[in-house]
Amino acid sequence: MAIEPGATPFLLLPMEPQMTKSVLSHALVATLPMLAAAWAGSVSAQTVEGSGSSKVMMFDRPPSVEELREVVAPEPKIRTRSIEIIGGAAGAAAKRPRPVDEINYGSAPIPPAAQPAPQPEVQPAAQPAPQPAPSRPVHKQRRQEVRTEAPAAEMAAAQPTAAAPVPAPEAAPQAFGFRINFALNSAEIPAESASYIDAVGALMKEDPTLGLTVEGHTDATGSLPYNMLLSQRRAVSVGEYLVRVHQIDPKRITVDGKGPTAPLAANPYDGRNRRVEFKPTH
Image (cartoon, rainbow, N blue to C red; front, top):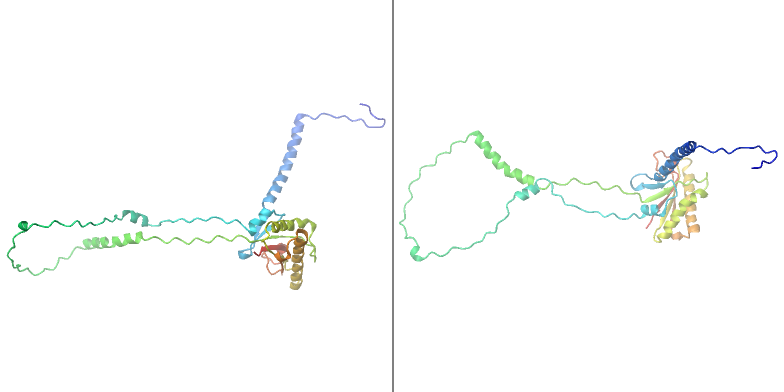
């Protein structure tokens, strides 16, 4: 190979196989934690926040249409009922004798010759006066009491036991929301948050009967009138985006500014209370 004048000559040395394996293994070890962190982040990207009827499915990444549909229109689950015999009812029913139908076959008439001759009437002999019954020992009386109480205990055991009340399943959230990072005192949707609202537009296009209420929420920082107006402006901005970009009928969208009146976090000044929620109206 010719070397140009003034150039610094260099040599390409072949890398040993052991060194190549070492470099690749170090690169793999450095990459695996990054992949694991990304995978864990995608799994925990949606959380249920709030309680009772105020539960909200919050997404920390742009959701898919299937994920939003699962919140606003979940598929009904088929429930089955079972009948269970509790206590001694089953055993008592098994021990109870089966009823036997009584059949009256009648009796053949006795011929006149076979009938017995009438006997002379006999006067009854005088009966001695009844004597008082001897008192029973105490242990025999106790045995008789136990025998008398036994059928009552069996009848009580044969009665079905009332089943314990089953608690009602916890209600799933019917609303979803995003924490859109609006600028200070601004209602303009940031470019990095547009994909969140695009998923909502795709859901409404897929289901023409779906109507949504867009709610704006703030934390308690600042005065109440200021936060109420700011949350209303941001809800209107999201609704206008759906109408302008996704051609959603304005009649299907309702906007509402909640301000700091419905916080999700216990601390009203927590920044997690700043969000935009979507609730179905159909």
